Amino acid sequence: MLTKRIIACLDVKGGRVVKGVQFEQLRDAGDPAELAAAHSAAGADEVVLLDISATHENRATLVDTVRRTAHQLFIPFTVGGGIRSLEEAMAVFDAGADKISINSAALADPSLITSIADRYGSQAVIVAIDAKRIDGEARFEAYAGGGRKPTGQDAVEWAREAERRGAGEILLTSMDRDGTGAGFDCDLTRIIAEALNIPVIASGGGGDTKTFVDVFQIGRADAALAASIFHFGLRDVADLKRELQGAGIPMRWPC
Amino acid sequence: MIAVVDYRAGNLTSVMKALDHLEADAVVTQDARVVANADKVILPGVGHFSGTTILEQTGLRAAILQRVGQGIPFLGICIGMQWMFGSSEEAPGLAGLGLFPERCERFPVNVKSPHVGWNSLTCREGSRLLEGIPSGSFVYFTHSYRAPVVGATAARSEYGGEFSAAVEREHLFGVQFHPEKSGAIGLQLLKNFCRL
Image (cartoon, rainbow over all chains, first blue to last red; front, side, top):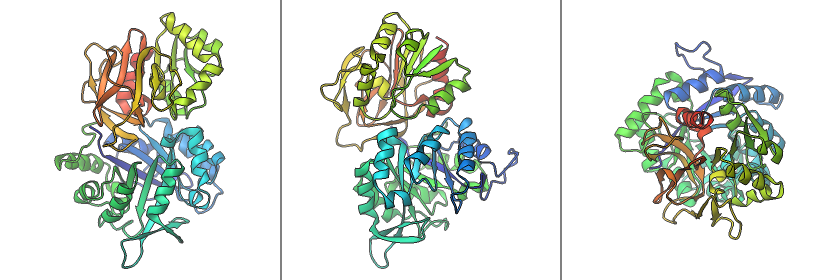
């Protein structure tokens, strides 16, 4: 049966992983290519590389980083962060990405989703949505610009539109939970998952095994993404998957 | 020389990267003449079944059929496998290669579509393509339509009922999943094909 996915995310800036891993076997704890390969070996189902550079100066560096990272990776590899046009997406695909993730650029011009999906297929286009609870309500607002600019758009409505426009998956980050390790926002995740046919990748708040069990069972997520928790020892991906399988969550384990 | 057919549907980088890793002599081509001289042919493809019309227009369909008729090993990946069949519900009226007469169908309404992620295989004994790949192995799928289980099914997977994850008959092979994105299992499959 179809399993739930655990996705390792690497935040990169200037070709280096921010908050690299302290892991003995690695020669270079900040090298995206090494870390991606190590996550894959430890059992990650996919790898996401997110370019968090503040400016657009280093696109060539990003493309080179993508190429080097993709070189030894034979699991799905997604690249996101600052992709603003079909041309920029093409450069990233040519360098070895299987999927790209777009956020602010899709909000600014939703037709970008369609133009990339028409050329590469919907399965290659992930629309990332940063969502924040609206105080006192069971509603969520989508943010642009790396979570800095409220758009006034309802996150569920935007997710539905992204699906209509050709998105293959939604990468849903809870801004309230991101970085806390206190658990994913299962309400947000479930509302989005139940509104769509395409897969939902939950992000923001992943911590102990129970947070993952909850986001799959209560949040109805198809996949869960985490960055910081995997930075404290790659064996945790393997442990996490083993524990999730023990808890009855369908997992690709052993792999 | 393995001809990897490019018909502008998706991204061939990952397939070529996997073949390079296996040190296969593979070239990307849109040229029917290159296919006509190839020792093996791989047809990857993603997106819509209707994207295969370009194969008719470019003479690639005829070149592929000719090579297949001459017993050259052929591997269809994803839409490439679906195109080996007679037709697909996704594009009514459009003929596939017809190497298997059946029609590809959509998933039943009680499951979400597309089918995305790692799912396990139930493998037929004696498959050359799946040598060294035991039942229970996981591979990566991403597709909205599926081929039914047929006589030539070499591996089944389950999502809203069983469907063909791989087909194999003599020198004809197809996989619904993406071997280039299925880790060590996928590389083993590609190696098996390259070694035929």
